[in-house]
Length: 554
Image (cartoon, rainbow, N blue to C red; front, side):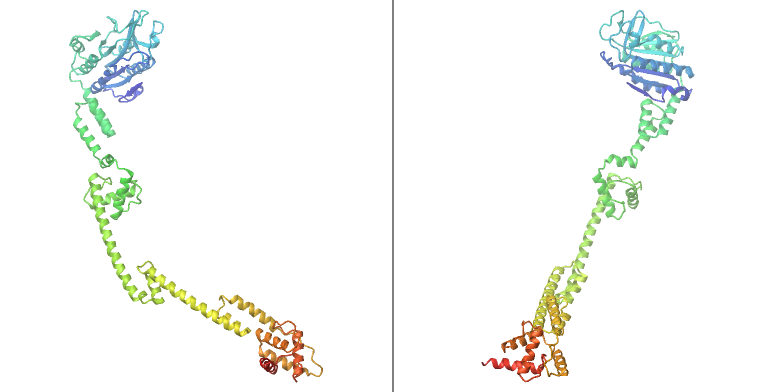
């Protein structure tokens, strides 16, 4: 079902319709039936709406109504006729109809094959329609566009309208084919037109009821039509939309404001916003516009394809700079110009970048010639500090790497040589000098281990029991002399080996002067005419060396 209220809802007409309106009109077109064959062409009567509105009528149109819905529409119309002072009413029905001895029925869209018992449920009596119209005697028109009922309903019912219909006083009933009814309504709404005269110009229309020979439905110079025109134009202006102006032109094709309506439509359809909207810009195309604006120095607050305040503001600034009206909405020609300017700017930036890179390269080469080209480390590092990504940066790093590798090699050689010297001397002082120079060297751990061993060996050994007759002072003197000699581990081992080679029992040959070593020393001293103190003196070393030399010739 389609129901359309063209001015305002008919339910509230009593409260809002102006008393200057020509009258009320109800048009019902039942073309699409649920079970019966459609009443083809019934919808043509809806075209009468435009002329009725032009004549100042407030019109309700509806299509494909059930019987209950037809009754509701008639009820609304009857209520509004009672509540308002109207001089005219027009009721139009187009669709299937049945008649019998009991009356005439306008069929609802749900009708199937009614009989006398069900006909009042499937249709609305014409008597009811005429009764509603009779509320405006002398100003009521009921127009019926006959639709042939399909098949033979039977049970005393016949399709269509009877030959004669009883019409209440003051009501004009016109019936005939749908096309002729539509034309009749169009002619009848012309001020100064006699209804019977219009009907008698055709062969297929019939008028019954009120048919005065000289009375016109709308008098000559009828003003409500002009008032309706003015009201419709005021409503269109208040809405100020293309749809509102189109509705005005449809209702008043010859109205007094037709040219103004067309001009208003043209103005609305050519606003900056509608012009841009008509371009149908895609998200990517909007991003391209934002990129162009950004390239030209306008801050669009992002390149996201959404034209928000940032983009609109940038467009206004660009338009003002280029002599356009700063609307913030772009046209196709402006897009082309913007893109051309951005392309030119991009080329300028590229040229500027090339010049900048050439100048930077020239400075790079000149600085390399002054610093890194000489090959020394200071110059290479100075170059990298200024040009870490320069033309010769990789070469500079490679050469510095070679210098550092050579430095590391020399340092390693020095450490190995110092370590060899420390091992050869094998004294506490020698290892301490090595560690002072190479605290983190490759042999630092070995040096510390050897130091620990030497310190342990240098701890005072148990004093030997002095030989009878040896002065304690002499023993102390020899002990002090031994400590002053600061004998290294290797020297101690050599002394022990020489004593053993001469037949003295020193115990383990490990450089540790224990009780056995002291006893062997005392014994050797006594055998060689020295005081047997058990300590190493220069005289002991000299004697042991002579013995070692003499053994070479044995």
